[in-house]
Image (cartoon, rainbow, N blue to C red):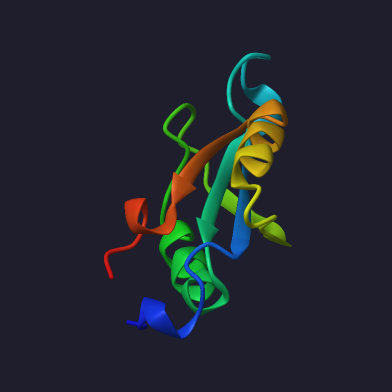
Length: 96
């Protein structure tokens, strides 16, 4: 567990792609973008390693991290959604 006061809450995006996304319908999401910070990223990655895609049941691949464009999170959200990602906050994945 970490103290969210130690680091700004939303500084990092952790990206996960469905390992079977090529079989999803064209209008379906291809993965998940989770907003967190560096302290929470590892816990998100660990939790997501046990999760599967709700559409096809395939596991997720950790495809990387990006710095959040704070205070322009709205831009980040729109950009990731346009790429086919569902947007989640870390506390929707991990219990702190």
